[in-house]
Image 1 (spheres, rainbow, N blue to C red):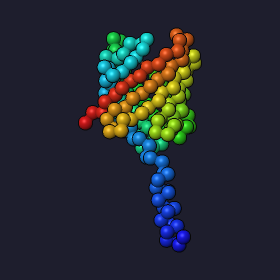
Image 2: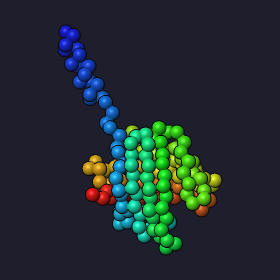
Image 3: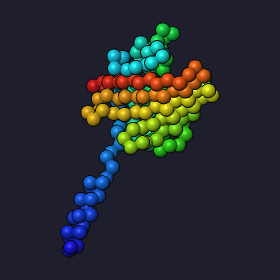
Image 4: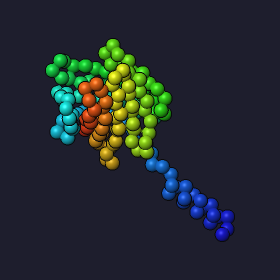
Length: 151
């Protein structure tokens, strides 16, 4: 095999085995209640997430409304597996975010509460699905949140 042919074969193999680009979750996302499943907990009346994702930094502002009113959370994660600390009310929550292939996994703990959230993006980039596995003193359960990208 000559040198040019060998170089072409190596380049073709590198392209074929290259990992696909990780999803970018940037955008404004709105809760799709009809496609979501909140299990044993009440779904919010409204939820929107504004996400700015420049890997490894993921920043988001969550606005959520329920019977007690509206709350806004400002959160930031590093997708390289290092710890992030965010406040929810007066409580601090320690989290790690890391990639599992094309899925972003955010694991959080606060006292007797633990959550593992798996983020996936549809192939067309218009649907964000968050599958939460929650462990608490009230039991273990799963919540699936489906959000639609706003244009």
